[in-house]
Amino acid sequence: MTPRPVTPGDEAPRTSEGRFDVPILPLELRDLCFEAGGRRLIDGLSLRIEAGPRTIVLGPNGAGKSLLLRLAHGLLRPSAGAVLWRNRKVAGAGRGPRRQAMVFQKPVLLRRSVAANLEHALSLHRVAGAERRRRCGEALEATGLSERAAQPARSLSGGEQQRLALARAWALKPQVLFLDEPTSALDPAATRTVEEIVQALHRAGTKIVMTTHDLGQAKRLADEVVFLHRGRLVERAPANRFFREPQTREAQAFLAGDLLW
Amino acid sequence: MDNLLAAFAQAFGLLISLDADLLEIVGLSLRVSLTAVLLAAAIGLPLGAAVALFRFPGRQGLVVLLNALMGLPPVVVGLVVYLLLSRSGPLGVLGLLFTPAAMIAAQVVLVLPIVAALARQAVEDLWQEYEEQLRSLGSSTARAIPTLLWDGRFTLLTAILAGFGRASAEVGAVMIVGGNIDHVTRVMTTAIALETARGDLALALGLGIVLLTLTVLINGGAELVRRWARDWAP
Image (cartoon, rainbow over all chains, first blue to last red; front, side, top):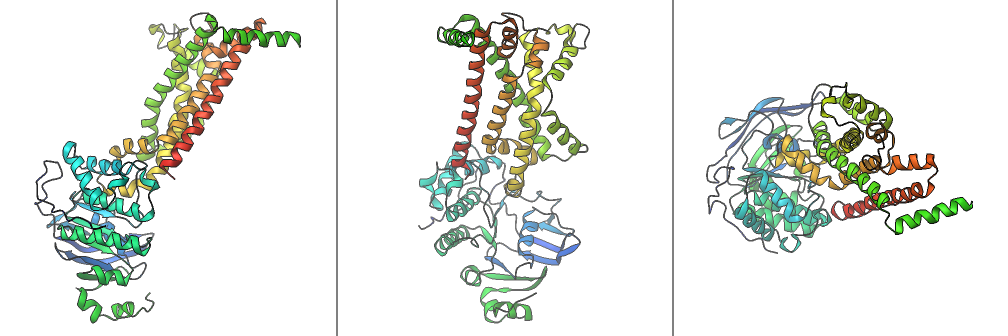
């Protein structure tokens, strides 16, 4: 299955989402802290994410990769610090710009048909009528799920469910897509398909920010690497440099396969 | 023993010949209970969902209250609705006492807590699973209510069937507020109570068979819903 690249912004849909060509990036995380249960899980993290390169967030388990994505996406409210989109501070959880989407490790699909899952997401973005049908069809085709449109979403295989989650994100035409270990539960074939869809989204102009603990996957996909350890940003570098000559002791140990804690 | 057999034979006779009195009673029963359940669902489903999703002072108390009210004794509901609708009561001017409308009102009070409490539980469970995803897609809490009610449709349908079972089987409330008036407010349960007391076992048995069949059908329906649900949410 080859995902068909689609150029977002080739039309300006009249929806309440805002026009695609009004950029929401760069995203800036400023001195971000997040505490839960008296423990500081994200500790003074500052990071600026620009449009363009695929950003892969790496780090050992518990480094705060998923939390970083959730804070950036607006699902969690930072204990301190700020999330800024295009220099504007986000007022609270869920108040960020709408042209961003997230794909979770375990996709949560509605107990409806495959197509109805896409329609629901589009209706939340107030995309209706012919435009909704067009985007549904396009997203299903891009993820190879056209044949499955009428099937109950929950009856799909694990790989297909994740493809549907990607189709849902695709249909929303996000400028930024956060992916939290999207292939960690999938077999190699399904992983490959998911990676192809991620690449197609990247080619279509969507900024990819993805966490993974699979170094092979990081090497295949990354343009730049953000390396976290214990809730701190330890190293950030272009991918080839990060994998060839990591600068910090922690990154060297991580790449060498040592246990980090 | 012969009496009993004769009564059964007569009861089947009434059923097979579609006896007019029997049909009228069954018809009124269904009309009252179905209307009550529809009203209770229209109020109870959004109410249960709202209690599940929103955080407000006294919420915990409301949850406990809803759960407790699921077991309301029908005679007490009948008594309360009677007091409200009686000539000297606050709603006496409506003149609803001893009408089917009063019976519907009493059954709504009985069924509403069942539907609301079960909906609250079902929606809260779904929300646990869906919240992050729905927020990520840009859903507000209020917008999540229709999403969750539809996705919980199988569980909720079972809750509604449970409510209908309760409404169609209760005697106490409809007896007190309806008065069991022939051709006006006589339903299956009140008729069975009366005809048994009067010794007209044939009609009582005939109605009893209909009521029992209805219960079996409701449970069959609930089983069908469960099977259907498995296809959509394995």
